[in-house]
Image (cartoon, rainbow over all chains, first blue to last red; front, side, top):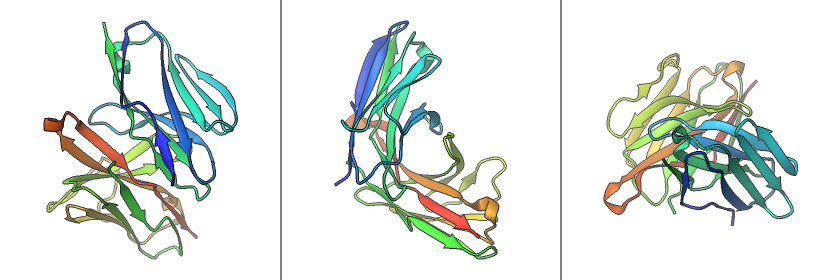
Length: 109
Length: 120
């Protein structure tokens, strides 16, 4: 079956760095998405990786290793507003999205 | 874990026809379901909030007469794109909301795999 795994919850301190991991097993691969979702709001697109490597976008970076079925989202210089759920989703060979359950990130002062 | 399915996965239709997309929560009941539209490498755009047994709440700019939403049961919501046109071609995603505060899960959305609509 198809499966996406990511930690349920993580806690970090304001100003620090946090890495949210995502491992996947899917039938085919057409890219991996990271979304941020604040409670009661629609998910906001953060990144899309389809090739191996690290993509940096401001304070956020996303890494992909297709051979390992692994990705991570790196958040630097954490701010209180980064407290949210982070969703990992993989598009499979049928261009269907397989969603992780999301990682709730709690930022403490 | 909670599973949300969508049917169909793919649909290709002619301009002017109507298309119905189903969203089902398979192992749980959802009083609230959301319909989103995804543009390539962009955020999910919330179209409407579907509440079981009542009228859907549409976001600003979304035509309620074009995108008909019916939430007839606690496990099924449908989105009908009426008189579809090529500009309606998109990836439509639904999610089901679960409130389990007493279990500590609080407010969680479970997303469906999406339906790719192509209007010729």
